[in-house]
Image (cartoon, rainbow, N blue to C red; front, side, top):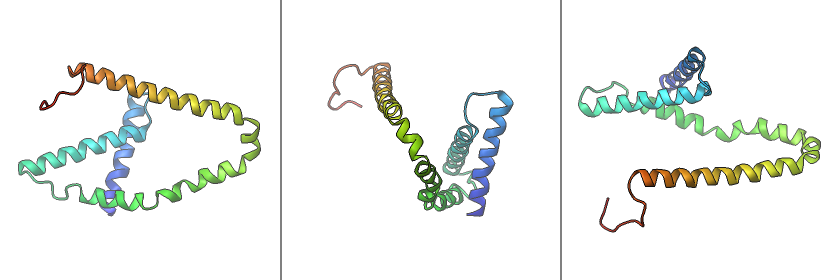
Length: 133
């Protein structure tokens, strides 16, 4: 588990370095998770080709499972912050609700349009065909 945690943190650090070095408008941890994904995919590909990575993804998986078991605990500070800001939330309740509803609708619309675009690019503008892939 220690090696897996080291790999996760190393990828996060590398992501931060890449983002700051290149001036990308992306959070460092997002770039780090992309690097981690690419590294795990490459290790899996090498393992399947017979070159065999010594560890594979098992240590990272163990560390990820360990972190995910405490995920609920990570929401406690946010919940406490909300509980301490009830007056502020009450004063700005309508704008907060409006932003939540509008952002949800915008997310749904963007998702639908992205799906339709990908579907059109794949040449499946009609209903799904039986027997086709």
